[in-house]
Length: 399
Image (tube, rainbow, N blue to C red):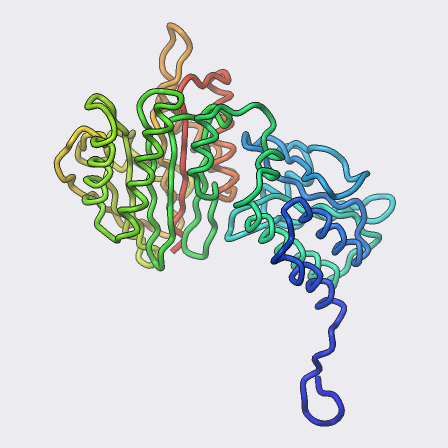
């Protein structure tokens, strides 16, 4: 568009630019507790009523409203039995007709991670409103992620029950629980969410390479959390100086051995996936063998040579490798997932795990939904018993 016949672009502010500018212009110096009121102001200019920002609790059971959006927006909602929960699980907009208009639930996405849901009531909905609401939701997700680094507000909102000090430490170590990119997707779950101690995982996407590590530090409580902190810190340092998988193992081994008594150890699994070719390399130091899921069925385990747990001074390990097919999924898990059992009864076992993976995979859900449902289903199948940390990470090479 030109103005004045001079061939110059029209730089006047449109309604849509003004609406998004309201968020962008204030974002830099916005205190965290004013994120919700600012988003509420933006959707009000679009005619939105009763807005909610809903965040997932740490147990991944409910969506909890962020304070500051005003009265009348409603309370917490179950993820499994609500329209907002459906939006969250499927990562797509859900519109629900109401007597006074329509309720719109929009996913708050950041780098494929699901931050939560933005829920707004409108008198009517059209394509222009949908476009603007999607962009407001995108900016709101970025604001939440950016401000999260220097506030406890979002953490307190998401915490639906008391959390142990060890769990506080572990959650502070974790990357986002999920990542969805064109070539690769990943999702992880930790149980018990509010009392986890020794389990953790870490990942990074560097160019065309995805790095992943899962660990299980021996023991419980603060001792295990402290050991896990050292192991993850050593892994990140080694990964960032770009050494090979076998050398990463040796680096982690030295770090744990130097800081803890000789009988202390960390089981670990380190992986490296070329997202262009699907070539997967791994070193397994005491974990159950990961499972390969192809065409929605477990077709085998990724067996590898035995390597001593980190901290025991093992030799440089042999690196195993396999080339994945597009759509393949890999399930990594700690022993707490399969070794749990009631007093006097048999362990839950890998065969039962495989049965449940196959059942859930038949529904052809996205990777975030499968990981969450698998963790919760297994916990119910074990009679809600979790005496040890039980962690799983599921990732998919998309080809």
